[in-house]
View 1 (cartoon, rainbow, N blue to C red):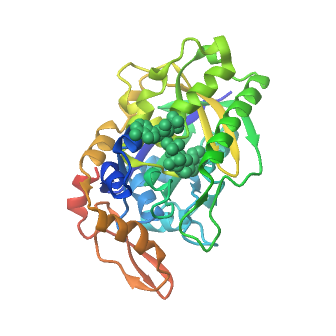
View 2: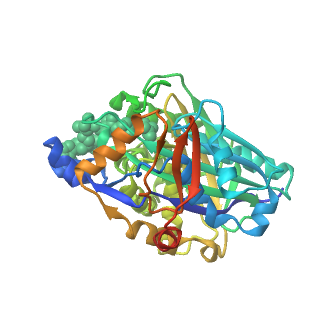
Length: 398
Ligand code: CAA
Protein backbone atom coordinates (compact mmCIF):
# COMPACT_ATOMS: atom_id res chain seq x y z
CA UNK A 1 0.00 0.00 0.00
CA UNK A 2 1.19 3.55 -0.74
CA UNK A 3 2.71 5.29 2.27
CA UNK A 4 0.69 8.41 3.07
CA UNK A 5 1.01 11.12 5.69
CA UNK A 6 2.22 14.60 6.55
CA UNK A 7 4.70 15.96 4.03
CA UNK A 8 4.98 19.45 5.52
CA UNK A 9 3.74 21.19 8.67
CA UNK A 10 3.72 24.90 9.48
CA UNK A 11 2.32 26.65 12.53
CA UNK A 12 1.29 30.24 13.18
CA UNK A 13 0.25 32.09 16.31
CA UNK A 14 -0.37 35.84 16.74
CA UNK A 15 2.56 38.13 17.46
CA UNK A 16 1.22 39.15 20.90
CA UNK A 17 0.93 37.34 24.21
CA UNK A 18 -0.45 38.03 27.66
CA UNK A 19 1.38 36.45 30.64
CA UNK A 20 -0.68 34.16 32.87
CA UNK A 21 1.18 35.31 35.93
CA UNK A 22 -0.47 38.72 35.45
CA UNK A 23 -3.88 37.12 34.87
CA UNK A 24 -3.45 35.19 38.13
CA UNK A 25 -2.82 38.45 40.01
CA UNK A 26 -5.94 39.97 38.39
CA UNK A 27 -7.97 36.93 39.48
CA UNK A 28 -6.48 36.92 42.99
CA UNK A 29 -5.14 33.41 42.33
CA UNK A 30 -1.71 31.99 43.25
CA UNK A 31 0.26 32.19 39.93
CA UNK A 32 1.54 28.65 40.62
CA UNK A 33 -1.98 27.40 39.88
CA UNK A 34 -1.82 28.62 36.28
CA UNK A 35 1.90 28.02 35.73
CA UNK A 36 2.06 24.50 37.23
CA UNK A 37 -1.47 23.39 38.18
CA UNK A 38 -2.78 24.18 34.67
CA UNK A 39 0.67 24.21 33.05
CA UNK A 40 0.34 27.41 30.99
CA UNK A 41 2.72 30.37 30.88
CA UNK A 42 1.34 32.65 28.19
CA UNK A 43 -1.80 33.17 26.16
CA UNK A 44 -1.50 34.11 22.47
CA UNK A 45 -3.77 37.08 21.75
CA UNK A 46 -4.97 37.95 18.24
CA UNK A 47 -5.08 41.64 17.37
CA UNK A 48 -8.45 42.96 16.11
CA UNK A 49 -7.29 42.59 12.49
CA UNK A 50 -6.57 38.86 12.96
CA UNK A 51 -9.06 36.01 12.83
CA UNK A 52 -9.03 32.31 11.98
CA UNK A 53 -8.65 33.14 8.27
CA UNK A 54 -5.59 35.39 8.63
CA UNK A 55 -3.97 32.97 11.10
CA UNK A 56 -4.60 30.14 8.63
CA UNK A 57 -3.22 32.13 5.68
CA UNK A 58 -0.08 32.86 7.73
CA UNK A 59 0.33 29.15 8.51
CA UNK A 60 -0.32 28.04 4.93
CA UNK A 61 1.86 30.57 3.03
CA UNK A 62 5.22 28.90 3.80
CA UNK A 63 4.09 25.44 2.55
CA UNK A 64 2.92 26.71 -0.85
CA UNK A 65 5.68 25.49 -3.15
CA UNK A 66 4.92 25.51 -6.88
CA UNK A 67 4.34 21.74 -6.72
CA UNK A 68 1.92 22.01 -3.79
CA UNK A 69 0.03 24.85 -5.50
CA UNK A 70 -0.35 22.76 -8.64
CA UNK A 71 -1.31 19.47 -7.02
CA UNK A 72 -3.72 20.51 -4.25
CA UNK A 73 -6.99 18.75 -5.03
CA UNK A 74 -8.73 19.56 -1.74
CA UNK A 75 -8.53 22.13 1.05
CA UNK A 76 -10.03 21.05 4.38
CA UNK A 77 -10.39 23.82 6.99
CA UNK A 78 -11.04 22.55 10.53
CA UNK A 79 -12.34 25.03 13.10
CA UNK A 80 -14.87 25.61 15.83
CA UNK A 81 -14.58 29.42 15.61
CA UNK A 82 -15.96 29.79 12.08
CA UNK A 83 -16.53 33.31 10.72
CA UNK A 84 -19.53 32.51 8.51
CA UNK A 85 -22.45 30.09 8.78
CA UNK A 86 -22.36 29.34 5.06
CA UNK A 87 -19.05 30.17 3.42
CA UNK A 88 -16.10 28.00 4.38
CA UNK A 89 -13.20 29.83 6.04
CA UNK A 90 -11.03 27.89 3.59
CA UNK A 91 -12.63 29.82 0.69
CA UNK A 92 -11.30 33.06 2.15
CA UNK A 93 -7.84 31.48 2.46
CA UNK A 94 -8.16 30.24 -1.11
CA UNK A 95 -8.79 33.83 -2.22
CA UNK A 96 -6.14 35.48 -0.03
CA UNK A 97 -3.43 33.08 -1.21
CA UNK A 98 -4.61 32.65 -4.79
CA UNK A 99 -4.87 28.86 -4.64
CA UNK A 100 -5.48 26.56 -7.59
CA UNK A 101 -9.08 27.02 -8.81
CA UNK A 102 -9.39 23.32 -9.72
CA UNK A 103 -9.81 22.08 -6.17
CA UNK A 104 -12.59 21.57 -3.62
CA UNK A 105 -12.71 23.60 -0.38
CA UNK A 106 -14.73 22.64 2.72
CA UNK A 107 -14.98 23.41 6.44
CA UNK A 108 -15.13 20.64 9.07
CA UNK A 109 -16.54 21.06 12.57
CA UNK A 110 -16.60 18.85 15.65
CA UNK A 111 -15.01 20.93 18.38
CA UNK A 112 -11.26 20.28 18.75
CA UNK A 113 -11.51 16.94 16.93
CA UNK A 114 -12.26 18.19 13.39
CA UNK A 115 -8.65 18.50 12.19
CA UNK A 116 -8.18 14.78 12.81
CA UNK A 117 -11.23 13.98 10.69
CA UNK A 118 -9.64 16.26 8.07
CA UNK A 119 -6.30 14.48 8.32
CA UNK A 120 -7.85 11.00 8.06
CA UNK A 121 -10.08 11.95 5.12
CA UNK A 122 -7.10 13.59 3.42
CA UNK A 123 -4.98 10.45 3.87
CA UNK A 124 -7.75 8.31 2.38
CA UNK A 125 -8.11 10.67 -0.59
CA UNK A 126 -4.38 10.43 -1.27
CA UNK A 127 -4.37 6.63 -0.83
CA UNK A 128 -7.08 6.55 -3.47
CA UNK A 129 -5.46 9.13 -5.82
CA UNK A 130 -1.74 9.22 -4.97
CA UNK A 131 -0.79 12.01 -7.37
CA UNK A 132 -2.94 14.51 -5.46
CA UNK A 133 -2.03 16.55 -2.39
CA UNK A 134 -4.48 17.71 0.24
CA UNK A 135 -4.10 20.81 2.38
CA UNK A 136 -5.44 20.36 5.92
CA UNK A 137 -5.72 23.58 7.92
CA UNK A 138 -6.80 23.96 11.54
CA UNK A 139 -7.26 27.43 13.02
CA UNK A 140 -9.04 28.51 16.18
CA UNK A 141 -9.36 31.19 18.84
CA UNK A 142 -10.15 29.61 22.22
CA UNK A 143 -12.37 32.09 24.05
CA UNK A 144 -14.18 31.65 27.40
CA UNK A 145 -16.15 34.06 29.57
CA UNK A 146 -14.09 36.76 31.28
CA UNK A 147 -13.09 35.83 34.85
CA UNK A 148 -14.20 32.23 34.30
CA UNK A 149 -12.13 29.14 35.18
CA UNK A 150 -11.49 28.52 31.49
CA UNK A 151 -9.97 31.98 30.85
CA UNK A 152 -6.46 30.87 31.83
CA UNK A 153 -6.50 28.22 29.06
CA UNK A 154 -7.33 30.64 26.21
CA UNK A 155 -5.12 30.99 23.16
CA UNK A 156 -5.06 31.32 19.38
CA UNK A 157 -3.20 29.65 16.56
CA UNK A 158 -3.25 27.72 13.31
CA UNK A 159 -1.51 24.82 11.66
CA UNK A 160 -1.23 23.88 7.98
CA UNK A 161 -0.36 20.34 6.86
CA UNK A 162 0.30 19.05 3.37
CA UNK A 163 -0.89 15.44 3.05
CA UNK A 164 0.87 13.46 0.33
CA UNK A 165 2.22 10.04 -0.65
CA UNK A 166 5.76 9.18 0.46
CA UNK A 167 5.62 11.99 3.03
CA UNK A 168 8.77 13.69 4.27
CA UNK A 169 7.69 14.00 7.92
CA UNK A 170 5.35 11.31 9.26
CA UNK A 171 3.45 8.37 7.87
CA UNK A 172 -0.12 8.08 9.23
CA UNK A 173 -1.23 4.46 9.75
CA UNK A 174 -4.76 3.66 8.62
CA UNK A 175 -5.99 1.86 11.77
CA UNK A 176 -7.52 4.09 14.40
CA UNK A 177 -9.64 3.66 17.52
CA UNK A 178 -12.82 5.74 17.69
CA UNK A 179 -15.29 6.76 20.38
CA UNK A 180 -18.25 9.14 20.07
CA UNK A 181 -20.62 10.17 22.87
CA UNK A 182 -23.32 12.86 22.81
CA UNK A 183 -22.52 14.94 25.89
CA UNK A 184 -22.70 18.65 26.92
CA UNK A 185 -19.20 19.18 28.31
CA UNK A 186 -18.34 22.18 26.11
CA UNK A 187 -20.43 23.94 23.45
CA UNK A 188 -20.96 27.34 21.81
CA UNK A 189 -24.41 28.24 20.45
CA UNK A 190 -24.40 30.31 17.26
CA UNK A 191 -25.10 33.63 19.01
CA UNK A 192 -22.13 33.30 21.39
CA UNK A 193 -18.47 34.35 21.06
CA UNK A 194 -17.39 32.45 24.17
CA UNK A 195 -17.88 28.76 24.83
CA UNK A 196 -19.97 27.32 27.63
CA UNK A 197 -18.03 24.67 29.49
CA UNK A 198 -18.53 22.22 32.33
CA UNK A 199 -14.82 22.02 33.09
CA UNK A 200 -14.70 18.99 35.38
CA UNK A 201 -17.09 17.03 33.17
CA UNK A 202 -14.99 17.91 30.11
CA UNK A 203 -11.89 16.43 31.75
CA UNK A 204 -13.79 13.26 32.73
CA UNK A 205 -15.22 12.80 29.22
CA UNK A 206 -11.82 13.49 27.62
CA UNK A 207 -10.24 10.75 29.74
CA UNK A 208 -13.10 8.31 29.15
CA UNK A 209 -12.85 9.03 25.43
CA UNK A 210 -9.10 8.28 25.53
CA UNK A 211 -9.65 4.94 27.30
CA UNK A 212 -12.47 3.92 24.94
CA UNK A 213 -10.61 5.01 21.77
CA UNK A 214 -7.50 3.16 22.87
CA UNK A 215 -9.56 0.00 23.61
CA UNK A 216 -11.09 0.27 20.12
CA UNK A 217 -7.60 0.77 18.63
CA UNK A 218 -6.43 -2.45 20.34
CA UNK A 219 -9.52 -4.38 19.15
CA UNK A 220 -8.73 -3.29 15.59
CA UNK A 221 -5.13 -4.56 15.88
CA UNK A 222 -3.68 -1.06 15.88
CA UNK A 223 0.06 -0.74 16.49
CA UNK A 224 0.94 -2.25 19.90
CA UNK A 225 1.78 0.41 22.49
CA UNK A 226 5.03 -1.49 23.13
CA UNK A 227 6.15 -0.30 19.65
CA UNK A 228 5.29 3.35 20.38
CA UNK A 229 7.95 5.62 21.89
CA UNK A 230 6.41 9.09 21.79
CA UNK A 231 2.92 10.42 22.54
CA UNK A 232 0.95 13.50 21.54
CA UNK A 233 -2.38 14.34 23.15
CA UNK A 234 -4.99 16.96 22.40
CA UNK A 235 -3.74 19.66 24.75
CA UNK A 236 -6.22 22.32 25.94
CA UNK A 237 -3.62 23.12 28.63
CA UNK A 238 -0.38 21.22 29.14
CA UNK A 239 -1.41 19.61 32.45
CA UNK A 240 -4.04 17.73 30.42
CA UNK A 241 -1.27 15.73 28.71
CA UNK A 242 -0.12 14.55 32.13
CA UNK A 243 -3.65 13.44 33.02
CA UNK A 244 -4.02 11.76 29.62
CA UNK A 245 -0.73 9.92 30.01
CA UNK A 246 -1.72 8.62 33.46
CA UNK A 247 -5.06 7.35 32.04
CA UNK A 248 -3.37 5.68 29.06
CA UNK A 249 -0.74 4.04 31.24
CA UNK A 250 -3.42 2.63 33.51
CA UNK A 251 -5.42 1.35 30.53
CA UNK A 252 -2.40 -0.20 28.81
CA UNK A 253 -0.81 -1.83 31.88
CA UNK A 254 2.59 -3.48 31.29
CA UNK A 255 2.54 -2.50 27.59
CA UNK A 256 3.22 1.08 28.69
CA UNK A 257 6.08 0.28 31.08
CA UNK A 258 8.68 1.81 28.75
CA UNK A 259 6.80 5.15 28.58
CA UNK A 260 7.14 8.03 31.02
CA UNK A 261 6.75 11.81 31.15
CA UNK A 262 9.65 12.24 28.71
CA UNK A 263 7.53 10.45 26.09
CA UNK A 264 5.39 13.57 25.62
CA UNK A 265 7.45 16.40 27.25
CA UNK A 266 8.59 18.02 23.97
CA UNK A 267 5.01 18.09 22.66
CA UNK A 268 4.14 20.60 25.41
CA UNK A 269 6.69 23.33 24.60
CA UNK A 270 4.68 25.37 22.07
CA UNK A 271 1.29 24.88 23.73
CA UNK A 272 2.62 26.25 27.02
CA UNK A 273 3.36 29.55 25.28
CA UNK A 274 0.34 29.69 22.98
CA UNK A 275 -2.59 28.31 24.99
CA UNK A 276 -5.47 26.27 23.66
CA UNK A 277 -5.93 26.34 19.90
CA UNK A 278 -8.82 23.84 19.83
CA UNK A 279 -8.66 22.03 16.45
CA UNK A 280 -5.02 23.02 15.90
CA UNK A 281 -3.85 21.98 19.36
CA UNK A 282 -2.91 18.34 18.71
CA UNK A 283 -0.99 19.24 15.55
CA UNK A 284 0.81 22.16 17.17
CA UNK A 285 1.79 19.57 19.83
CA UNK A 286 3.06 17.28 17.05
CA UNK A 287 5.09 20.13 15.50
CA UNK A 288 6.43 20.91 18.97
CA UNK A 289 7.53 17.30 19.44
CA UNK A 290 9.22 17.06 16.03
CA UNK A 291 10.91 20.47 16.39
CA UNK A 292 12.08 20.12 19.98
CA UNK A 293 13.03 16.48 20.48
CA UNK A 294 16.82 16.30 20.74
CA UNK A 295 16.90 12.63 19.67
CA UNK A 296 16.50 11.73 16.02
CA UNK A 297 12.96 10.31 15.81
CA UNK A 298 13.45 8.87 12.29
CA UNK A 299 11.81 5.41 12.09
CA UNK A 300 10.15 5.75 15.51
CA UNK A 301 6.45 5.55 16.26
CA UNK A 302 4.14 8.13 17.83
CA UNK A 303 0.73 7.50 19.40
CA UNK A 304 -1.72 10.39 18.96
CA UNK A 305 -5.00 11.08 20.74
CA UNK A 306 -7.45 13.61 19.38
CA UNK A 307 -10.44 14.80 21.41
CA UNK A 308 -13.29 17.15 20.57
CA UNK A 309 -15.90 17.94 23.18
CA UNK A 310 -19.42 16.94 22.56
CA UNK A 311 -17.72 14.42 21.88
CA UNK A 312 -15.44 12.45 19.53
CA UNK A 313 -12.11 10.80 20.38
CA UNK A 314 -9.63 9.07 18.10
CA UNK A 315 -6.41 7.22 18.93
CA UNK A 316 -4.04 6.50 16.03
CA UNK A 317 -0.39 5.92 15.24
CA UNK A 318 2.23 7.56 13.03
CA UNK A 319 5.82 6.72 12.07
CA UNK A 320 8.41 9.46 11.75
CA UNK A 321 10.22 9.30 8.39
CA UNK A 322 13.99 9.04 8.11
CA UNK A 323 15.56 12.41 7.30
CA UNK A 324 12.47 14.29 8.54
CA UNK A 325 14.55 17.03 10.12
CA UNK A 326 15.56 18.43 6.73
CA UNK A 327 11.92 19.30 6.10
CA UNK A 328 11.04 20.80 9.50
CA UNK A 329 10.36 24.51 9.98
CA UNK A 330 11.87 24.58 13.46
CA UNK A 331 13.77 27.83 13.00
CA UNK A 332 10.71 29.68 11.69
CA UNK A 333 8.47 28.31 14.47
CA UNK A 334 10.92 29.30 17.19
CA UNK A 335 11.47 32.75 15.66
CA UNK A 336 7.71 33.27 15.50
CA UNK A 337 7.29 32.58 19.23
CA UNK A 338 10.47 34.37 20.31
CA UNK A 339 9.49 37.49 18.33
CA UNK A 340 6.12 38.00 20.02
CA UNK A 341 5.37 41.15 22.00
CA UNK A 342 3.89 41.14 25.51
CA UNK A 343 0.68 43.15 25.93
CA UNK A 344 -0.87 44.54 29.10
CA UNK A 345 -4.20 43.60 30.68
CA UNK A 346 -6.18 46.49 29.13
CA UNK A 347 -4.99 45.61 25.63
CA UNK A 348 -5.69 41.92 26.21
CA UNK A 349 -9.27 42.65 27.30
CA UNK A 350 -9.88 45.10 24.44
CA UNK A 351 -8.51 42.72 21.81
CA UNK A 352 -9.68 39.36 23.12
CA UNK A 353 -13.16 40.32 24.23
CA UNK A 354 -14.36 43.67 22.94
CA UNK A 355 -13.19 43.36 19.34
CA UNK A 356 -14.90 39.97 18.92
CA UNK A 357 -18.35 41.25 19.79
CA UNK A 358 -19.03 43.65 16.94
CA UNK A 359 -20.95 42.46 13.90
CA UNK A 360 -20.93 46.03 12.51
CA UNK A 361 -19.10 47.14 9.38
CA UNK A 362 -15.70 48.57 10.25
CA UNK A 363 -12.23 49.38 9.01
CA UNK A 364 -9.56 47.56 11.04
CA UNK A 365 -6.43 49.53 11.92
CA UNK A 366 -3.30 47.55 11.12
CA UNK A 367 -1.97 45.91 14.29
CA UNK A 368 -1.03 42.38 13.25
CA UNK A 369 2.54 41.13 13.16
CA UNK A 370 1.49 38.57 10.55
CA UNK A 371 1.55 38.80 6.77
CA UNK A 372 -2.22 38.83 6.23
CA UNK A 373 -4.93 40.78 7.95
CA UNK A 374 -8.63 41.47 8.11
CA UNK A 375 -8.70 44.95 6.56
CA UNK A 376 -12.41 45.70 6.95
CA UNK A 377 -15.94 44.44 7.16
CA UNK A 378 -17.60 46.32 4.33
CA UNK A 379 -21.33 45.87 3.62
CA UNK A 380 -21.05 42.73 5.80
CA UNK A 381 -18.32 41.33 3.53
CA UNK A 382 -15.03 40.35 5.12
CA UNK A 383 -12.17 42.02 3.28
CA UNK A 384 -8.72 40.43 3.66
CA UNK A 385 -5.42 41.93 2.55
CA UNK A 386 -1.68 41.51 2.76
CA UNK A 387 -0.34 43.50 5.70
CA UNK A 388 1.01 46.88 4.66
CA UNK A 389 3.99 46.24 6.95
CA UNK A 390 4.68 43.12 4.91
CA UNK A 391 8.45 43.40 4.90
CA UNK A 392 8.56 44.17 8.60
CA UNK A 393 6.17 41.34 9.33
CA UNK A 394 8.05 38.88 7.14
CA UNK A 395 10.93 39.25 9.58
CA UNK A 396 8.66 38.66 12.57
CA UNK A 397 6.86 35.84 10.80
CA UNK A 398 9.45 34.01 8.68
N1 CAA B 1 -0.11 25.61 42.96
C1 CAA B 1 -0.02 24.55 42.12
N2 CAA B 1 -1.10 23.88 41.65
C2 CAA B 1 -2.32 24.33 42.01
C3 CAA B 1 -2.48 25.44 42.87
C4 CAA B 1 -1.31 26.09 43.36
N3 CAA B 1 -1.38 27.14 44.19
N4 CAA B 1 -3.81 25.63 43.04
C5 CAA B 1 -4.45 24.69 42.31
N5 CAA B 1 -3.55 23.90 41.69
C6 CAA B 1 -3.80 22.77 40.79
C7 CAA B 1 -4.94 21.89 41.24
O1 CAA B 1 -4.53 20.96 42.22
C8 CAA B 1 -5.34 21.24 39.94
O2 CAA B 1 -4.41 20.20 39.62
P1 CAA B 1 -4.95 18.74 39.20
O3 CAA B 1 -5.90 18.96 38.04
O4 CAA B 1 -3.73 17.99 38.83
O5 CAA B 1 -5.66 18.22 40.39
C9 CAA B 1 -5.09 22.34 38.92
O6 CAA B 1 -4.24 23.29 39.56
C10 CAA B 1 -6.34 23.04 38.46
O7 CAA B 1 -7.05 23.44 39.59
P2 CAA B 1 -8.64 23.35 39.65
O8 CAA B 1 -9.08 21.99 39.25
O9 CAA B 1 -9.12 23.90 40.93
O10 CAA B 1 -8.95 24.38 38.45
P3 CAA B 1 -10.30 25.04 38.05
O11 CAA B 1 -11.47 24.34 38.64
O12 CAA B 1 -10.19 26.50 38.32
O13 CAA B 1 -10.33 24.88 36.44
C11 CAA B 1 -10.38 23.67 34.42
C12 CAA B 1 -9.61 23.93 35.70
C13 CAA B 1 -11.66 22.90 34.71
C14 CAA B 1 -9.51 22.86 33.48
C15 CAA B 1 -10.74 25.03 33.75
O14 CAA B 1 -9.57 25.71 33.39
C16 CAA B 1 -11.60 24.88 32.50
O15 CAA B 1 -12.83 24.80 32.57
N6 CAA B 1 -10.96 24.86 31.29
C17 CAA B 1 -11.66 24.78 30.02
C18 CAA B 1 -12.14 23.36 29.69
C19 CAA B 1 -11.02 22.43 29.33
O16 CAA B 1 -9.95 22.82 28.90
N7 CAA B 1 -11.28 21.12 29.45
C20 CAA B 1 -10.29 20.12 29.11
C21 CAA B 1 -10.92 18.85 28.60
S1 CAA B 1 -12.06 19.21 27.26
C22 CAA B 1 -11.07 19.48 25.88
O17 CAA B 1 -9.93 19.13 25.87
C23 CAA B 1 -11.65 20.18 24.73
C24 CAA B 1 -11.15 21.58 24.73
O18 CAA B 1 -10.11 21.88 24.13
C25 CAA B 1 -11.90 22.57 25.48
